Image (cartoon, rainbow, N blue to C red; front, side, top):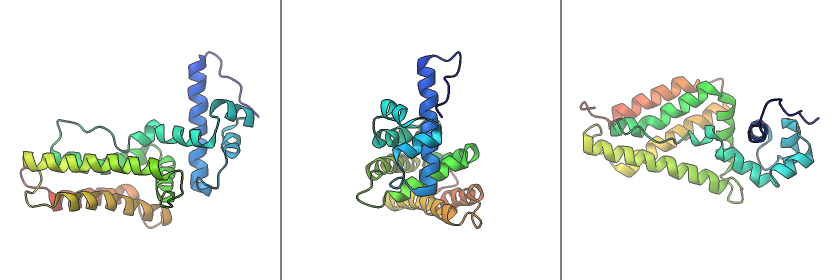
Length: 207
């Protein structure tokens, strides 16, 4: 059944609502089945739209995937840093961003990480999009650590590349364990411990 247009909404507003429903439906199905096993028709049905509407609005499954990765929630995994923060704060900010997203919508966060891990296959349509996001996050971590070396908040003897790899891989490793064994990992608590470790390992008393 196709939802009726919401009265009082402009056409752009209706488009925004339908896009959001489609992205949310895609997120649910990514968690349940994975992206490759999900069809555009299934996403449309889950969102409450007809096959014709889905084709007219998006045209292809790939376009729905683009909408998923362009969603504000996904982009906020690697937001712009606060220039007033110390370099150490900027480098560790990735952890607090994940915590904030978990507080707002843990189900969508789970979908993002499931999509990330599905991208391990070279043939996956997710691969280039996920790699782009990872590269963005990595560049912000390394920029924060470099700033920290200049402002004194980061230890002068750190290996910049190794520290960047540590921060990025630890977040993804913890997230993977949370997805597979949620009963064993309280993600917000574990992320707090992770941030504390990063600060103790890479920070100085000058911060």
